Image 1 (tube, one colour):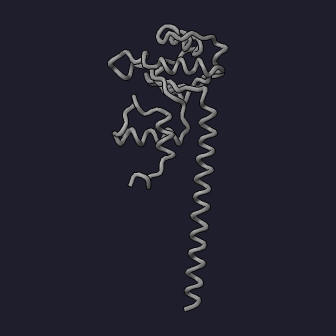
Image 2 (cartoon, rainbow, N blue to C red; image 1 turned 90 degrees about the vertical axis):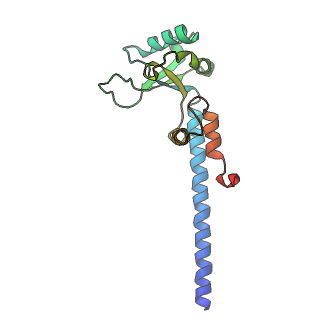
Image 3 (cartoon, rainbow, N blue to C red; image 1 turned 45 degrees about the vertical axis):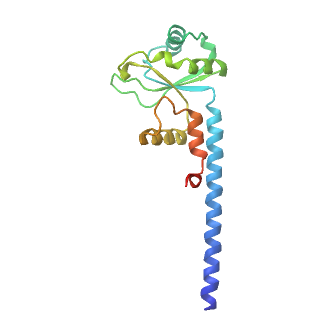
Length: 169
C-alpha cells in the first residue's frame, strides 16, 4: 500500500511539473509572438497589387491617386513578394515595410478607398502584417463566421489570442 501511495504522489508531482513547464513554454511562445508582431508595426500586407518592374513607383502612384497619401521612395524600406511566382492572373501578396510609421498608418487608414470594384478579384486590399500565429487565429475566426473581413482587426486578433477560454464558461 505504501509503495502505491508514494508512486501516486510522485506521479502527481511529475504531472504538476509538466503542466508548469507547458505553461512556461506557452508564455514564452506568446512573448516571442509579441516581439515578432512588434517588428511588423511599420509594415502592411497588400493583396491584389499588380506586379511590375518597379513596385515602389507603382505603389507611390497607387497611394497618391487612390488613397490621397503622398510619400517618396525613401519612405519605403522594402517591398517583398510572398510565395513563388505563378503563371496566373493572380498577383502574389506583398509586404511593404515603411521607414516612417506615420505614412504606414496613413496608407492603412485610407485602405477602404481601394475597394471600388464589385468583383473582389479586381480589388487591392491593404491589411495589417500579422505573425503566422496571429494570421492563423484570424483565419480560424473568419471561418467560424463570428467575424468578417471588415471588422477583424489586428487588435481583435490579439484579444482572441490572449483571452482565457475558461472565462467564457
